[in-house]
Length: 350
Image 1 (cartoon, rainbow, N blue to C red):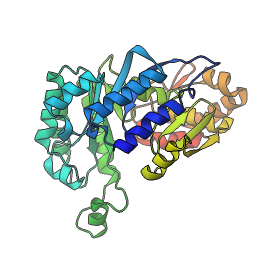
Image 2 (image 1 turned 30 degrees about the vertical axis):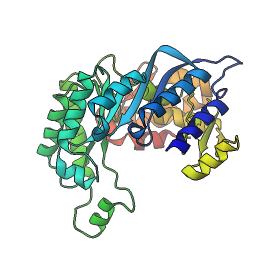
Image 3 (image 1 turned 45 degrees about the vertical axis):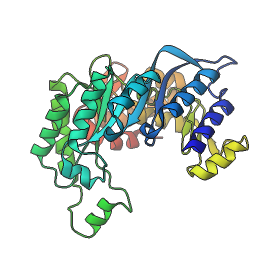
Image 4 (image 1 turned 180 degrees about the vertical axis):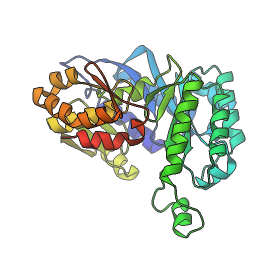
């Protein structure tokens, strides 16, 4: 871990100019520790990484600084250390409040740990807490999912993300399904869970601002929203992706190879220059997932009149069906359209 931390710090120094615009360095509005299990970092290591960011970038005074954490890592002592390291937002990987579901997903924590982690975070002074939930789990009944949601809404959380279970290859769950010991995920059940979720979230005052994300007013994730709004970002570490508005870059995944390359002063990765069609398709794919939708004025300004004509022709079918709502120049996916959001976006691609 120490070798990786040293490499992360060195990459921060190597890439301090990546986000510069016309020779000026913009303020960082968000910092996000994720893509693994950053709550395993020692307190001193987290402080060193933050110090390296401060030394090489200007951080906004009201920056959103998030850390992903497993519930079993969030002891009262750890929470105090995270506050001291300037973390002001926690993303806690709860997944479920049923121990049987957690065992199926091979999670290290149990439901009691998850509840305690959120309660302890609030007691430690964190007032911007998000949790992850999983629906569409094999064997999860509608009453199970309702109980999961009820428990989530009873906790002091201001944001949550909910995802349909994806069964990864070569996992225990994948083997159990292939061996016929567990029923596979059923799309119809997952769709029902999602519809229940949309209704319950609205009832409890959460805005459904992105397909998988829900927030109380004032607590929309600024970091994730920057991805959906196609703003530039810099990713540090193995597998990290970066985007500067015209090209995308990604680091190699292997930790050992990443560390060796960084030690030589070389950032190990690949990049691609995005075509206008790439950028247009990404605008549609990300924008249509959000409550802000896409705007034909933006399409015209960023891509040209021909893209507007193409969008209007292709979108007409979904506007007619009610899956896509038109509000002057804006087009937003309706509640029923959210069930087929990926299909709609793919149909609109050029």
